[in-house]
Image (cartoon, rainbow, N blue to C red; front, side, top):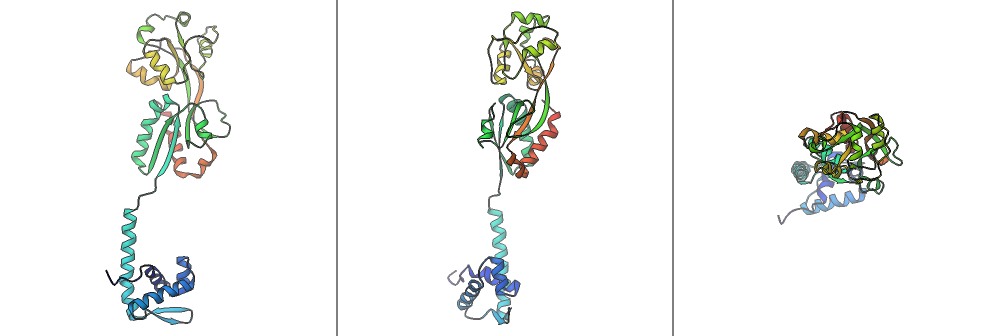
Amino acid sequence: MRDLPPLHTLPAFEAAARLGSFLAAAEALHLTPSAISHRIRLLEDHLGQPLFERRHRAVVLTASGRRYLAVVRDMLWRLDEASGLLRAPQRERLRISAAPALASKWLVGRVAAYQDTHPDIEFTLGTATGLAPLLAGEADIGLRYGEEEWPGLLAWKLFEERVFPVCSPALAAGLASPQDLDHRRLLRHPLLSWQRWFAAAGVSHPEPSIGPLYEDALLMLEAAVAGHGVALMAGSLAAPYLAEGRLVRPFAQDCADRCFYVVAPPAIQDRPAAMAFIRWLVRGAHDVI
């Protein structure tokens, strides 16, 4: 390889030969015409013979130039193809922040299913209940439980929730009617209203002010499994526990409550891959846990 030409001259030679003009080659390669002319001259000096016939506003390959072009063009194409195969593909990164219970019981399986058909997306999943990660730019998409208004964020409704009490089978054995809850420890969550459920069940009962207050619904579900009390829980989050028999519904009454939403900063609209994932989540949200 001791007789290789200056490699930066070869794209200039190929472009000038293809376009028939130093000026057109300069525009294609974002160089000045003088830079193209200098590179061609450098290549010709290295080879010891002209590659072009200079004509008015155009150049034409010599016989030697035509033979050399075939080799150079093949080499450049092969190099471009090999580089493309080796170059690490650009991956879209989506940072998702979800309420812990929804993340573990609903989201993780869906992310895995989506990535099976979209391997170019890199997901980062974290848990949080507030909006700080989204507002601070630490997360791209959030899944949250709440009301319809999300100041500063766009929101897409996933599904409406109905809530009802759940408890361990052993604890349920002593509950014949909602009035029996007066003598049981009620597990509380700041976004779930016991008073609203009591009203739906036809019982006048104030919002309980005692009993553990859980900010994480997943912790409250596990406390209910352990027999620590009766939890008021969103149906989609309780469903896996009910299906496994770890929790039961002591009463049939339920009531409407808030909804789960996908929320994101407005800038998410400029990211097609993120918007496609959001639309996919929303379309499949009817198939809740």
